[in-house]
Length: 114
Length: 112
Picture (cartoon, rainbow over the protein chains, first blue to last red):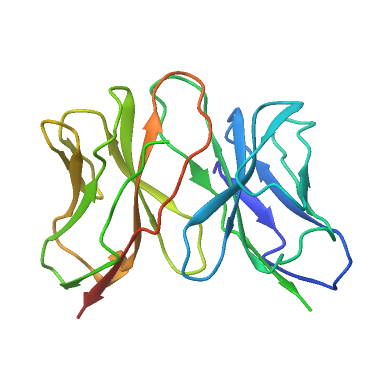
């Protein structure tokens, strides 16, 4: 079945470390997105990419980096510059075809700084 | 981005209909109205979307006001599995989409 796979489901990071969250999709979707969700809050956009080798900053990009070398993959690196990285991270994708439905989301990665 | 306004929370009894309202007074003519729901510790799930006409699918119905400044998601018979946060979102039309802006959503509680 097609879908989005995020790994790992839970991730613990020591202060000062960089960590990379994986997001892979087999839906042949063009666009991919990373969102952050804090407890009791809505989703905030970190980065998005509409085509391979291109990406744009979202509303809260500071302290994060991404790459889009393959259509299927959009990894997110949480760097040591991100002062409050503990959160629930969600990856999403969608097709750029006109009339297509909305986003498909992964099941998320919960990152905790220890 | 055009914004949406939803009540913070709503409650329903099992097997009763639920009407979840959303105001979007600054909607543009090409904005689609999308609804997603999110269960605890999961990613949001697509529910339904529409442009001008009312829409039905196996999950829900979407009623859109004639002036498009508001819409209502209708769950015809709520079940305990429908307890979730429901987000009403506006998405621009066309073949290329930018960011999707989520508000706080409505927390739906379903009582047995």
